[in-house]
Length: 307
Image (cartoon, helix red, strand yellow):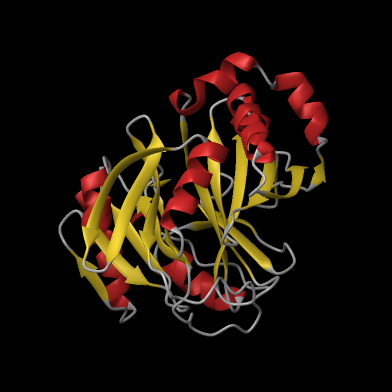
């Protein structure tokens, strides 16, 4: 295998890059909003009508985590097409994670998919009422992560959900609900093929590979995080551009400064990719027609509702 060409500062995203609120197109706005409020303790922050569509932003505290766009009449999520595998919500500690897992598991609209110790993190998986994947997780201390041959060492080890709740669940954390911090830690996508995904998400956007060689998947990040984005073909191998359906509407990324957006614009132009630049954010569509928006920090509900 040839040695990859070294990437320069202008080729990669800044170490302080982070993920931001994910946008979902939903058929039942009230049902989905109450689900995320009840199951994940997200509060409605702001709402706006735009033409026939209503946009509602939910989050914890002043941090937007999810934008729901009411688009009734679209076909349901197709698990075989490109799009969202899951949105991963990151919690500061085990108590906050356990309280949210408990809420999600108690909600009859949730479908529990499983739980895993990934060596770098501990994670629990659910599916929402309209078929969108959810991961709830905490990170292990970064000093405990292992690296081998340039890859972050990740695994899929057994994690007993009942034992985890017995150890970490507290009534105080359950009662705190939306007062406990949370954020979008990473977004895992379904794509048609890994090579095309790498050309877009790594070469054009500027993420750096963290785990290669995992069957049917590629993990990437900025700043050495285990992953901000992941792309897999487990259900979607060979998928073409997405049809208009419910589900993923936008993947949001934040970068520290306008210089970072300028470098991104340079990479997009060099590859002939169409994009929109409003000064604070750059939007571009991936090869499967999923929109990715890269913005400056401090995204407000006003910013989200204006997109």
